[in-house]
Each structure stands twice: as C-alpha cells, then as structure tokens.
Length: 350
Image (tube, rainbow, N blue to C red; front, top):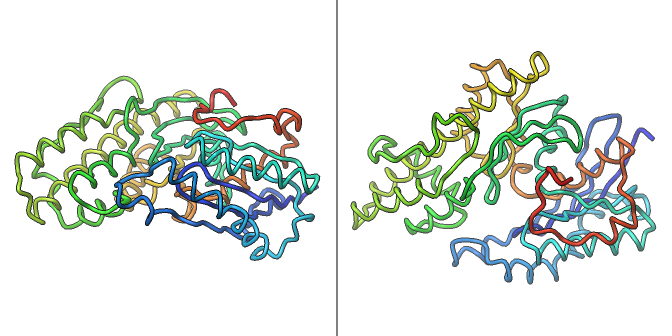
C-alpha cells in the first residue's frame, strides 16, 4: 500500500490527545489533532500532579477520539491501525491511553501499535519535512533531555542525557521558586527578554567536558541562592534572574550539542547533514536562534517541528505508527495486546 491512515492516542503526562494522520508515499498529512491540556488543573501546584492527571484522562479520552475522527472525516473502520503511547511517562495516564487504544483496535479488528513516546518525538520532524536518516537529535522537554543519533527507524544511538533534571523541569522549578505561573518555560522566556542575562553569574554545569551529558540541578540551586541573596525581589530582579537562568541553560545546551555535532560528523561523515530539535522546550525562540547559529558553524541543516508538534500531542504518535506500517514492521499483535504501560522505556530497549 502507498497510503495508511492511523489514529494516535497520547496520555503520557497532562495532555489528553487524539489525532488522525495519513501517510502517503512518504509524506504525512495531519487530518485532525485534538489536544486537551490540563494546565489549569496543575497550575496551582506549579507542576504536574500524577494522580490528578490520570483522573482527568479517563473521562476525556473517548470524546477526544470521537472528535479526532469527526474532524478528520474518517470513519473508524477506515483506519489502518491504532497507535498509542505505551511509555515512558506517568504510568496512570499511560495505562488509560494504552488500554483505550487496545480496546478500540480490538473492536475494529485493526492492529494496535504501542509507541515509545521518545521515539515519537524523535520522528516528529519527519512528519513535516523530508529528513533522511541518520540525523542528530536534541530532545528537550519537561521530562527528557537527550542527545542521540537517529540512525534508522527503531535504531537510536544515545550520545548524552541529563544526569538529574530535564530542561523543562528546571524551567518549571525556577518559575515556581520565583512565584511565576506554570508552565515555567514560556513565562521565563518572556521575562528574560526584559532582563539582564549578565547580572547573575550562574554556573554552566559540565561545559567543556569530554562527554555529551547534561546536569541542571546544581544550576537550579545556584539560581535559588542568587534569588535569596537579592530578596526581597523586585520585578526587575525577577527579570534578571530569568534572563541569567535562561542564558545559562542555553549555554549548556549549545556546548553539549556542539560536542555531539562533532561526534556525529566524525562518525557519519558526509551522511551527517541534519540536526533536529524536538520536545516542548524546542518552542523557545532564543534556543532556536542559538541552534541555527550552531548548525551554520557545523554545516548542518536545522529542523524544528512546528510549535504545535513540539509539546506532547497525538499526531506524533500516529505518525510513528505510520512509519512502522510503511516499513512493514507491525509488532506481533499477541505481544502488543499484552504489553503493559511502562513508566521507563529507554530507546535502547525498543
């Protein structure tokens, strides 16, 4: 077949999402992409509360699937498969989406494709652009921070990862400490634009080290100490702290990604052509500009998914299902139906 239509389901964190994506001769088309965000529920806590997230997925998931199919104008029997996030993520939410996907696929007599959430982020840019394997990937989100080479579908070589906090988590915790709204990333980016990034001398953990790992917990502590020393904080102080924190985080990302780009070029030669930045933090415009400059220096093409596909969504789940269908690599259905939700699922274990 040269065309596949897949329903995707995503419930790994605090978004309840369903999407219908069509694969046609190697190109993707999003027919519907429905996302319900729980930001208002978790904002009072300054972060996602797992039990509350799982409770909200349950009454929403069926309506989201119905809305996606209606918007796509695709009757359920016309689907070729159902893809659902199976991990990693908050296990309560993952269980709801995966179980729903299994039941829906079984009722239709269609294949179920359990999807690794990290792999979906890794492949998202291929939905909207013609990107050939291999490519270098910087995955930066609320729960993940990794550098890897996407060698082929299902083949991922990890170059480095965070040893503690993820980037999005560091932004959220910084915002919470400074009394800013949740989610922290957009708020800090807006505040940083009005602040002095050189006022507070924050560290750049692991910069210059001969590996591509990250660390942000010490940086977060240094920010808190700087804030305490300047208390009580004025609006200008908060802007300067946000600018200094954002600059330090971006410097770390640039330093580690530059090292990974050198490794990528040395190991893959003329095939090392692209850098993909994915995950929710990829929506940061200052990061995008910095990565554009890095790519120019390393002769790489930069690809960043559209903003709506950077944060968690079901289109990336459906697209991953399309990729596996097109490659004729459907999972064994007995194993797929028996698969449990996985709170941890490294790409090395695909």
